[in-house]
Length: 457
Image (cartoon, rainbow, N blue to C red; front, side, top):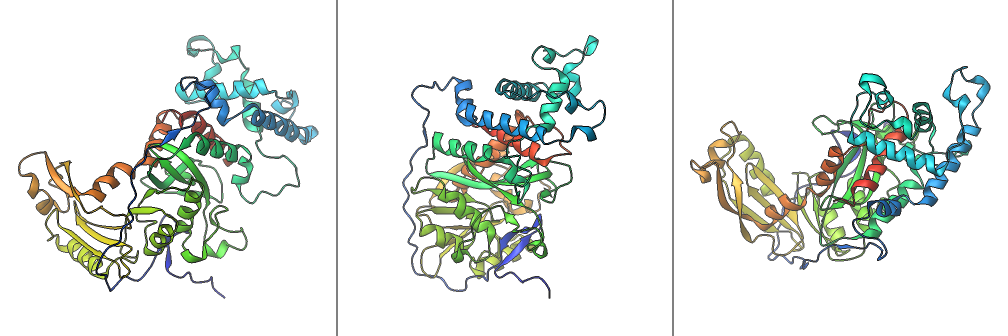
């Protein structure tokens, strides 16, 4: 018997366990749009009164407090105590192991930060002598062998040999849960938030890593992130796989994310519901790309007080007429730049939109006031653009022009990049190195980066 056929979803090209909507197009429209009126409100930073915003050390300790460090110390020492020393090579570093202390772990983290700011191709170069001696001699704070021993043996999770880990992500607890809870506690989000994907690089053998060509990080673990202005509010991890593997490898797709019945089998929609449930209830506007946006999700989130502005695919349940327009325009490029089509759904709770920018872009929203026109400075597309003959017309011979665009397009362009802003900050000050063994090391580094860099954002 073959694998179960999924209903109203299709696998994304990047991963069979990531589902996109596959809904029939709407054929009927309503008489009026009843959009959600969601007034703007600003984010709030919730630092304890005893901590200055300039005190980076104390802020870092909120994310990774002494109690967590002590747990790492105990788990690491316990894990090493379980090793069979007689089976080790005569010159193994582990035979010279001394139990780690809290101070050791803090020094280890400090060295990792230094390595992120001073990149060397080989980790051993940080302890070099002679002409290759680094700017700061790390031997003054920790010997190379000691650092490498801690680096390979550090354990965050309970080292109980009988403990069952459903996936590599279980090895991050309780560190992951505490950093995520602290991130939510220190930042009360404003109205506009976004959900998108991030990656933690890992090139070794793992069931759960993805290869996504064209991304800044092409290979690694996928992480679903809710963010605002580059600050990661909360996140969840993802297991790669094929539907036929669901029994042998446990549940695949978003890790430990419940699937609401109202959203059918669409696990990308479930990610949206799960992440938004973790922030305080308020009148948010959530920005999504076409992996997520569909009529079922907009209906479900509206019932929970969340507005959505999202780009949409032709399989999202959007109006059939708009799907046909997009198909024709993709072939013949006849619709003038700036053309705006819009129709309400049959129940009036969703607005279907088609807007001709560089191409005909499909949108959905359940938010009021998104069709108002605003002025925006736009760059003229290049002559080699596939739709150059049409979209260059409003610019004349000018490289830029102030043009009128719909409010939702302007807001989407400014708000959807919240996760990318955080990823860009991480890339600029990355602590990641090339990991080929122990995928949890890559993920622990991702969490350390988050604890260090999110307060900067």
